[in-house]
View 1 (cartoon, rainbow, N blue to C red):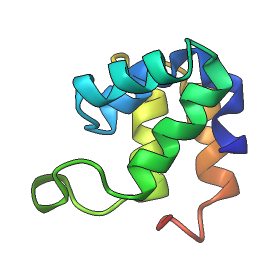
View 2: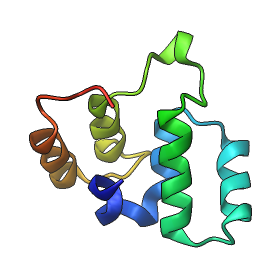
View 3: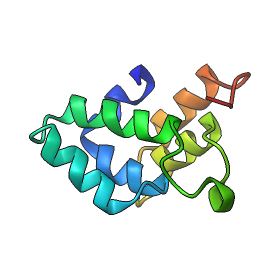
View 4: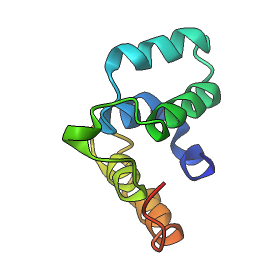
Length: 94
């Protein structure tokens, strides 16, 4: 989760880019009363526990996280996506 801290305010957009259902993201926001870091932590947990269509979108990987952080509909932060990729280049699988 530390890798996503700089883009924590975009947690919901990144979760959407990672294919987590919108209803689940809304539920996380409600449960955590909008606390960004708690929402981010729970969103990452949902992703790692494969709370999305893994048959269609595959298992969780760092490469998908990088793409979500870089994507305009996600974090929209290319520089940070590159930083994550460099840090986790040898371990793309979460």
